[in-house]
Length: 393
Image (tube, rainbow, N blue to C red; front, side):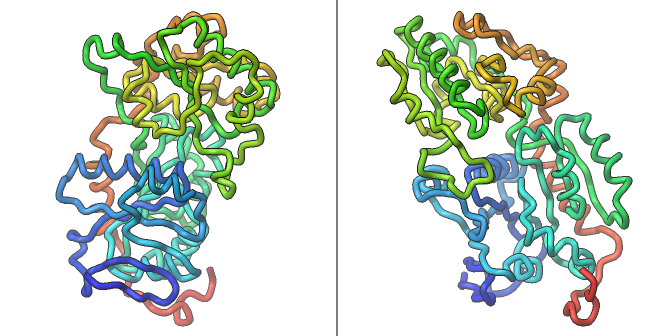
């Protein structure tokens, strides 16, 4: 293994000579907590489908919104590859180092390379597969940003038809495979019998944008305080996505942080606490998961833990995420009133809704099948410098 000194673009440990296409690793991109959550889960899916498939983690440094604490917590081994500089993705496409690039965000520089016809048809470049970033209440723009990707994976299942209808209006659509799924939306597996009986942790999973007002957030904290007082043998945790001084470069900035609001909460019970643990750590001990509009609701359902989606908080009519969340979850059976939430009256999710929203657990296998199809796609060309062929981008 040697260090590749490729212009100002890629720094990574890579073989001195290109590997055969089938032997190359898959690269997962990340730049913030959301994309790193995706990358970790997608890596697990790929390794479950093929333990011999090498998977690498690629840090998009130019878009970084991770703190040192988050990187150390979520990826303690560090990234395998760092992408930075204007030529990073061009270098990556031409390096013959990876057979696929998987991402939940189509970075501008990545999309720019795919829009270059000469690069798009270049033989031996990696297959680019894009997933959604999570619960996307307004996915049309996201679909358009993914129009040049070689593979696109969507959810719920009905969105495949929506995507194809939108794609029919795109001029010069090139080779593309469309599939169903997301590594955070795998079909739930039930917990072992009686697993919840000994659990004493209740989690409120916060979200950066919703509730959108201070009063709405105080409403949720007051409800959690009431839960804590009514259940003194339980601990009610306010699960943060990030600490107040983190994620200042994140796409979604938080105006009213929960630690400050908690400090202003009168008569706070001792068993109401704040945590910044990982989602996996929370779900391993959770007896109940509560959220408003967060993707965390999907994590809770997938883990087999009882879930409540509460949308009737104070000022909810001012929150632009409430109506689309209510629509998306209307058939789930999990939208919960304040009274039912305070009394911990849970319901199992609607099986038909689960089947529509969650994908089979063979996602890794299906992703690698798309990569194999890409390798054999029609019309591939050797790469020529842009000055020869690519005058119009």
